[in-house]
Length: 84
Image (cartoon, rainbow, N blue to C red; front, side):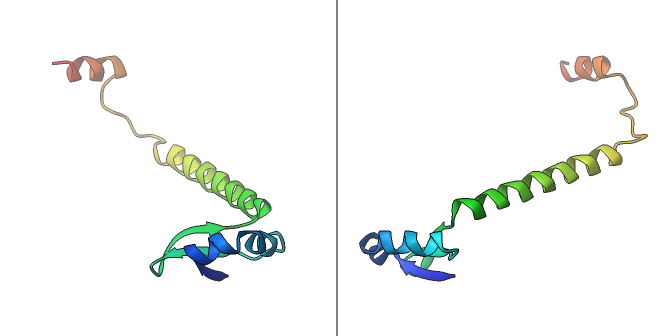
């Protein structure tokens, strides 16, 4: 992964895009601190798919955790109690 300052990124944007098309990731910095990352669209899509899978697994884990757990009251009673 290459790191480039904002000024350099503005001046060499086309060159950086060519590098990204060939699989490189570019981190853009301001005063030495990372502020952005340029990645190819295919890499970004893979990240989105991974995030969907993590969310799906988390939701399944939450459903498993709530098995057999009750509020001790009905939902309508809980709503009414909350209105007092």
